[in-house]
Length: 97
Image (cartoon, rainbow, N blue to C red; front, side, top):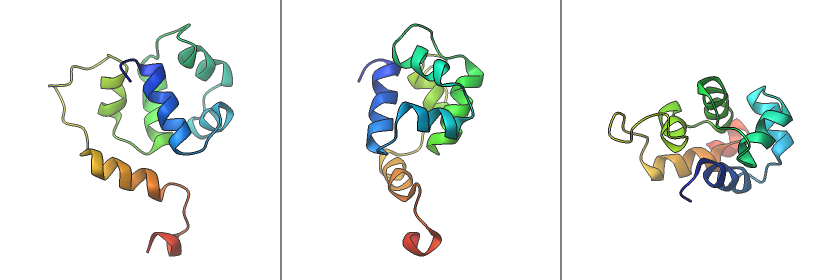
C-alpha cells in the first residue's frame, strides 16, 4: 500500500493484532493509533519509533513508510528477513528453534 495507514494496517493484520494490541505493545494511546490509521494525524518520530519497536522492525523502515525519511537514505531489512521476524513474533524460544 502506498500510504502509512495502509502499510500499518497490513502489518497489524499480518500479526493478527487489534489496534488496541498495537497500542499496548507500542506503549502509545489507542487514540494515537486510531488517529494514524484513520489518517487524522501523521505519525511523528516518537510514534514511529514506538511502532517500530512494537512490530520488531527497523526504525528506518517505519520512518520511510511514514514519509519521514527518504528511501535512499537508509536501507531497510531485506523483505525476506522482515517476513522471518514477523513469523517469529510472539513465539516461545522453543518454537523459534
